[in-house]
Image: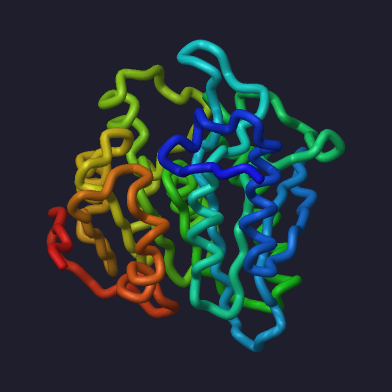
Length: 288
């Protein structure tokens, strides 16, 4: 039996029969979630979902981060599936009747379902219109399967970019939620000192459409991958958003400690209800 300690999750897998896809399947099966596939454009998108049998009319959909996008600073990976699927680990804790984790293009695929997977779709074009359209089509299919009319979108890290872009082009999103998300790409690439994502869309450029959509954003005070300043840059461009909540949480970083405290955070900020309105464009800290 292999014991994998999270503190050395990415380096201490010696002797273990482990794949990122297998780990995701294990997380889902422990909660009796089912796997699902969507044929969307040139891609096959993989996901997991809970029980769809209730009469709830709203589907909560999680989208994860950029995953294992790069082998090193210069070389894209051959498989962008995340080694630590935080968004899935959040999704399975969500106390709502109908919940779906929707994988991004080329993540969690098998050899047979790895269609359309050019490395640009997890590097320069990771937030491109092609990616948005594939996710958009999958959401339409998921609504039919779940028998729902409305959706709530929740995105972790780069998944937050995607849920914002999806919300800007759909009319069935009641509200969207981001966790540690790089919502202003221009500010983010500048802060990180990386090349611009030439084929990607920037949520901050869709401020006119997004400012009237209820939204909530959580970011860690000690996050050096997506700092609170990136969220602030996005919020300032919204210019008097209708209904927006944002919270900087002390002692949290990009990975710690969202999974451990997600049930409490979800009930506090993200339940199926409209996020409360905050009228000033400045960041606040949750000291509780």
